[in-house]
Length: 488
Image (cartoon, rainbow, N blue to C red; front, side, top):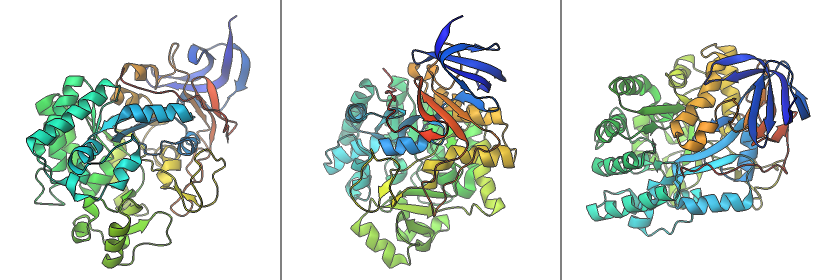
C-alpha cells in the first residue's frame, strides 16, 4: 500500500467537476492530491475528518487584501487562493516579486491594472505594483478624463507588456473614471481578446443612475464581449447594480444565449467599501443611488458622516480613506433578495472584494498574529464564505451545499482559465492539494460591521500545496506555502 504524506480520512468529499459527493479518503503527497479512495489510505500523517466536508480550497477572484495578515484572515474563511483581478496591479512583475519575497500563506495572482496605467500616462504617477498606487490617486481628475488616441495607445501598450509578464487578465475600474470614451474600453477589451485572457470590470454607471452616462455600464460590458470576443467578467454585480440587478442579469443572460462570454460574481453583504474620493461618491450625485452623506461611514471611525460638508472635507483631505457605502439594508428581506438573486444567478462566482486591513494605531505590521486590537476591515474580508454557507445553504436553502462549493471553487477557477487554474477548484488525482475542510452544521461568519475581523467558525483545516495553514481551527502563522498563479 502506498503511504502518502497526508491523508484526510473519512470525510464527505465534494468534487464539483466530477460530481463526486461521498465519503472518501484523500491522499496527498508532493503538494498534489494523489488518490481519492473509497477504502482507507495510509499516510505519514492521517487526520480523521469524519463528519466534515472535504472540498477544493476556495478561490477568491476579487481580493484587495494581499499581505500576510489579510491572507491569514481569509484562510480562516476557507480560502486557499487570493487573486487581485478587478483593480489589478501595475506592473505585475513588481507585485509578484514583493509577494514572493515576503512569503504568503495562500496562493496569489494579479491582473494588470488599466486604472494605474492610465494614472501613469495621464497623471504622471510612478507605479510600484501596490494597491496604494490606486488608492493614493483615486480622486485625481487628470486620470478620469477622456484621453486622446495617442494616450490610449500608450495605455494599451503598457497593459500588453504586463500581459506578456504573466498577468492573469486586465482589471478595468471604469466605474472610477465614468466619463471616458467607450472606444477606449473597447480597445482594452480587444487587447484581452487577442491575449486570450479575461477582463475584470467595475462597471460604470447604469443609465437608471445617470441618464447622461456615455454608455450604460451593463450594456458596455456585454457589447464589448459581443464585438471583440473577449471574456468579460462583471465584478460585484450586486453592488454596482443594486436594485436594478434583475435588469442587468437579464441582459447578461441574453448575450450568453447568443454566444458571448460574460461571467459574474457577487458577495453577500449590503454595504460596499471603497476610497471616499471615488467619482461616484461625489456629494452632488449621491442621490442617484438613493444615498446621503450619512449612508457613508469611514472605516475605523465612529459613526457615519454627518453631512455634505463632512463628506467634502474628507474627500479633500484623504481621498483614499476607506469608507463603507451602505447600499442595501441586509435586514430588509426585500432588499437582501437583490443580493440573493445576484449570488444564485447561474454560474455566478462567490468573491469577497476583501479590502486591505486598516491599522488604527501604530505602524502596520502585516506579519503580526493574532491581529492586534484596532485592526479593522470590511466584514466581507473575514466572513464572505462562512456567510454564504450559513445563509444561502443552511438557513435559506437557496443553494445546495455542493452547488455552493462549486461557486466558491470550480466556477472561479474556470473564470480565470489559465493552465495553472486547471489544477485548482477540484479534488482529483494530479490536482493541487489546496483543500478546505469544514463542518457543514456549524460553519458561519462571525465578522460584523462593529467587529469587522472576527474569523469565521467551522473551518477545521485549510491545506495549501499540501501544507496546513489552518489545523484544528487554528491558524499556523509560520506556514507560508502560497505560490504565484500566473498566465505563463
